[in-house]
Image (cartoon, rainbow, N blue to C red; front, side, top):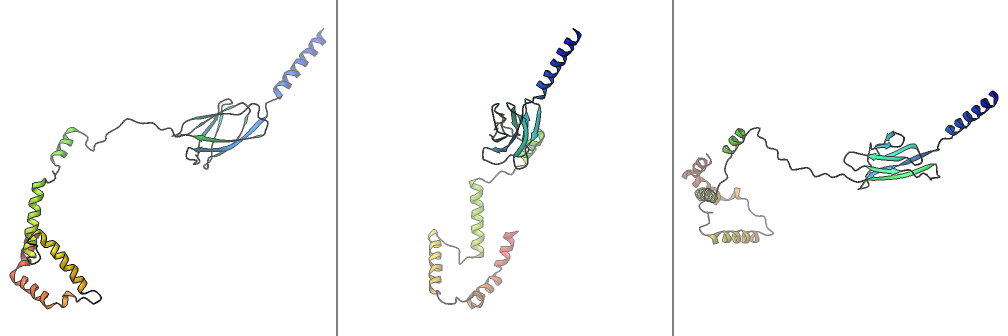
Amino acid sequence: MFHSRLVISLFIVCLTTAAFSQTTPLVQVKGMVISSQSEPLAFVHIVDITRGKGVISRSDGEFNFFTEKGDTLLFSCVGHKKVRKIIPALYSEKIYYLVVVMPVDTQMLPETKVFPWNTYDEFKEAILATHVPDDDFDRAVKNLALMELQQILFPDEMPSAPGAASRLYLYEYYDRLYWKGQTQPMQIFNLMAWQQFFEYLKEGKFKQYEKYRK
């Protein structure tokens, strides 16, 4: 009786050992993780949820590891949505190729306004010290002052009417046509220009220009 029980116990132990020794064959998982723009994603966390293990993709987005059939893989990366992949339980090959596309996880954050002032008093001082741009009247006054300065410095070239500008342009255009194909003389050798220069110098017009510059 004792021997029969011992034989049965040994038989059960052998069956249990054989059952545990028959593990599921591993599958080699190879592939690449890319973005929606087909760019490789580096250092993506790949976790085998079933077994509680994980790896990280390389800098070129590729990965290579072993797992069991039927396991669930979770791919996660900052700025991208998580992706789950399941290894088919009835997969018969030794290598399982996988290309994982991770879409961008776009989150609209609320608008935040950043001001360079710490307190309301600093903001008030900055507003009071702000230079207010000129209005139309101030700009007109400055333009008139500039025209007066031009009339003092260049009285012969100051147009007396709106049509004078067009006449001046036509004069310059005809002057270019006149000297076309020829060597136009330099003003430094123009005796009339030198005479006008000395007249301006005697009349003190250059001193008036310095006064307006100040």
